[in-house]
Image (tube, rainbow, N blue to C red; front, side, top):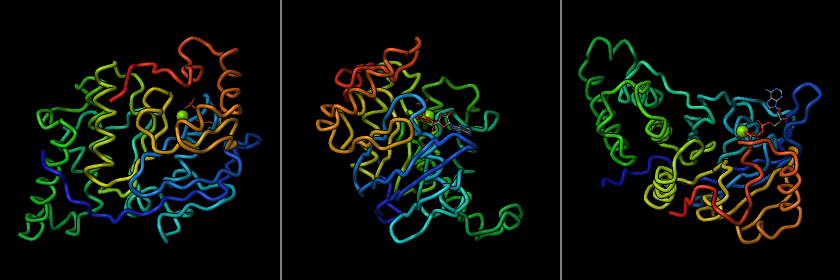
Length: 284
Ligand SMILES: Nc1ncnc2c1ncn2[C@@H]1O[C@H](COP(=O)(O)OP(=O)(O)OP(=O)(O)O)[C@@H](O)[C@H]1O
Ligand SMILES: [Mg+2]
């Protein structure tokens, strides 16, 4: 397998005192944590704890009501999503967000457009410099597709792919921006046990082979506890615990947050999953 070179230098992603309110609802309240370069950091908590809102603040989709976001020395707080991506923060979404009618290759090439120096006009006119650059991007798209195992799907429209394959293409697309930090929102939700194991292995490879740090939101506690280096736990928008998987698993506040929701959990609500057992057997 080709190991793609690292474009961005590893940098620490820091959230400092993040608060986000929507009208009268405080979705996230004074949350601070750091994603250390070269680590897998999990952000967990029951449904509605504020995990996706945190992601949206970290990636410029929402401007925080208070607090700052930094990547290394760069301030991201007031950046738009495409600027955050350009600075090196990639993401996937809780709900898959691919252009369904476009091929996998075109979805991945679109993601690389932010890295393209030659303008659209030069590319359209087929000028030599632009053609060379296009070839380089295509080559890189092939490497990344190989890394996540979707080379055989490059010509297919993404809308025709299975859910598991679409998740992998989304991951490939996030890697196409050459991130130094990758944010994954529920990467194994909806996957079967074997697909989940494969995704867990892939996330470890992203850390170990690409040197990209990962911030992971996931309800599958088996996955979180087996691959995360550090875990931050939210409940009702507040940070209630932080530490190694072994540490947070024992934390009374964490246990009570999860047990508390178990009482009122509806079927399909995975937030009540026990902290110590895998819901999908996803140990890589
Ligand atoms: N755009 C919005 N407008 C109003 N309220 C919102 C908005 N987005 C999130 N919320 C509220 O903020 C809180 C946190 O939601 P969020 O989606 O961040 O939780 P989550 O931890 O990602 O939950 P889940 O595990 O279900 O995905 C919830 O009470 C939610 O209803
Ligand atoms: Mg969410």
